[in-house]
Image (cartoon, rainbow, N blue to C red; front, side, top):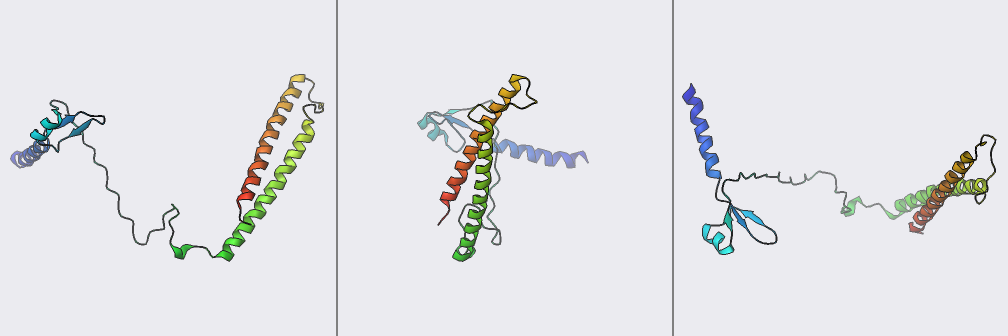
Length: 165
């Protein structure tokens, strides 16, 4: 029984020993480690053998070929049959324009409300702001909100400008 198990182990160990060839370290800007050179080629290139250092070889899985019925790639390389006709694209563009214009109106309204409340840094104090620092904190927050709302309005206008007429 022991001999049956020992024989395959010896065969596997000898295969592993054969797989370990001479590995060379070749100089250069990209230092090259290879076992594909003969001793003469290695000496011609100035390569030295590496002995006593264990070498780990990591093999990556080869990419599989895409299946014929797989979905088209998302990199924009679609076939001509998957294109949208001009009328449908026009409807999509009009819908997108309508949504962006609605968002632009609400963003402009928020901006106007915040600017009115900010009043150029001289906003009215509320009753709950007995402490002056609370008032200053609210004004700073309003100023930040105004900057954010202005950026939103500008971004929406840029998006609308990108749409085809």
